[in-house]
Length: 309
Image 1 (tube, rainbow, N blue to C red):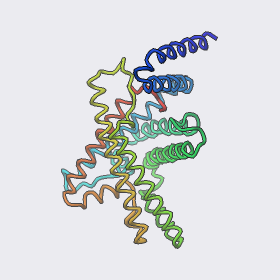
Image 2: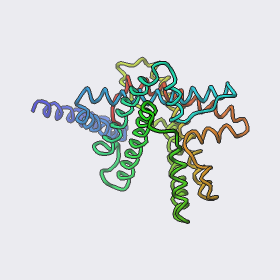
Image 3: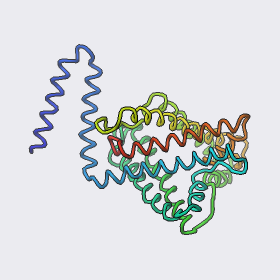
Image 4: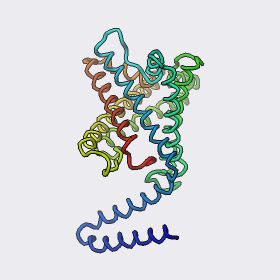
């Protein structure tokens, strides 16, 4: 009862503030009210401190993966005998380091925290979507696909430790199977390529506008660190967007020429970049972007304001 009374008082204060300021900037007042409502909903969802910390641990684990991929890409630029690695081969490289198996197990556990975050977004808190409207369903579907993707990363880490299998490019394998279905399979791959390219463009737009950047707890984080983290996030998200665009374009081309060898995941995107004129430069820039994204995720795991949003 006391919490409800406090909440009512807070809403009355906001309404009074809105009536005083609406004549100067009504849009800002509406945004403030929406933000407050979102904050109340957020606090109701993450009421368990252990759950919140576990989800934030997922951010750190995700940062480790991207940081490692970026480091290996930079190594490929500097050392001719090295090749840029996708997620699986980056994890395989990590397994060969001292205590590599232990680190991979811890990484898998941490990544599942991020998987949990995506599932909660899809089931409980779908961001700014409108319930089960077409936009909301699309957004929820994206969260579920993301959760499956990172669950695959956790599985890859454990499979390396337990020696359950060898590397397979799942995207390429899926394209090969789809091409066994005349016309329909190629059409599905084409549509998938357009969708992946669209996701990449969305990342680039999010990096440009800053809409994909986390909100930090301003009372705890140093302003200089926050400034640097935001820029690292923008650079990293842009690098991810470019990787998605290359992957999508490869899928589209693969569908048009009916050649599954052109399709592939992140490692294939790195190979395409490296094969271009000044490929070492483009690979180095994308690798640096992935390193920046990893560092940004480390900061987000410590100072992020919202665990789910």
